[in-house]
Structure formats: C-alpha cells, structure tokens
Image (tube, rainbow, N blue to C red; front, side):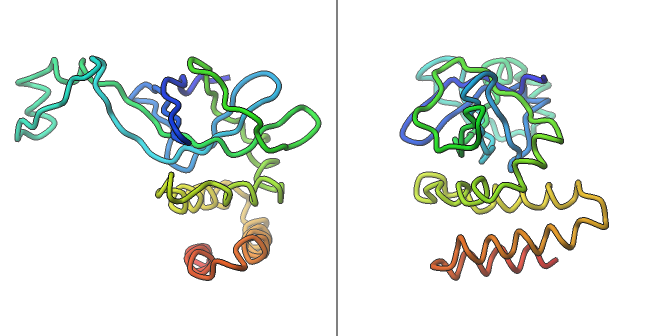
Amino acid sequence: MNISGEILVIHQGFIGAQSESNSMPPIGNLLKTDGLPSFIFLVADHYFESKIPGRVPSSYGLSPGELEEQQPHVFYLMRAMVQVVLVIANDGKGLVPPEKVPPIHTLLYVMNKNEFVKLMKSPAFISSLFNIDVNIVPQRNNAILLLFKRYIDMLDPDEKVDETLRLMRKLSSVLKDDYRTLKLFMDSLER
C-alpha cells in the first residue's frame, strides 16, 4: 500500500494530514487507514503550514521561481498538508458510522481501484458523504463532485451512463430536501 499521509491535526471536524508536496493526493480522492476498523477519508483541501510552531509566513512579493532562487529556506520551513474528512468506517463486516477518530500519527493510504469502485457502488457510502457538515467543511460539495467525476472517468465507456444514472438516482434520494445542492450535482454530472 502506498502511504499518502500521516494525521497530525485533529480539531473539531478538521483533520490535517502531512503529505509530501510532490505526492499530495488530489482533492476528491479517498484515503484509508490500515487495520480494523478501517477509516475512510475524503480529501477536501490542500494547504501549507509552518514547521515551526507560531511562525507566521511573510509575503516576499516574488514569483515561486524567484522565491525559490532568492529565499530557498522558505520552502524548507513549510510542510504540505491535506485536509481530510472522516466519512465512514469499515469494521470488516460492512460499512458503519465511525465511532471515533483515529489518533494522531495514524498513517493514511491510497485506496486501490477495486476498493474504490466497491465503495462508490455502496449506497451507504454515498449517503455518508452528505453527512459531512458543510459549515465545518465548506469545500464538501466540490470535493464530492471531484470524487464522482474521478469515479465516472475511470469506468469503461459501457458503464459510464449506467453509473451516472445510478448516482443521480441516489443523489435525488439523499438530497431530496436540499434542492440547491441537488441541482448543482445534477448539472455537473450531466456534462
């Protein structure tokens, strides 16, 4: 399994995981923990923070190339982070709501294609994505939309239409009381 990050920050629904900047998982990607229960996370955002506690970065007014040439130490003082959101857990028998958050320093792994496809076909998983509080994770809809598009893009051409329709039917059920969000997803998936 490919390690994609390590949980370093847990704060009121916000989970930050350190990642190598050249291998940051894309927004809308799914990550998991190893063992049982296995926790499933959605990558919601990327950000950088200082490696030195309390240090506030300064603006230099330079392009990234100029900054790297003139002030290379700046990049050594920053670490690449991904904001992940705990979506659901797998207890070995099936998908269940997570009872707790995994501890700091838990490693996160990229899901393989078979795990990813199986999860995307699960109605429980699709429903759990919309349990993410948009007030805590304002990027929720964008991350879920990118997840759906990634899933549809990886399917064989014969499967794409059927799976898109299945997702739309599930979304109609899950978002029946949130017309604005439902319309956003329907319009985006139709393209």
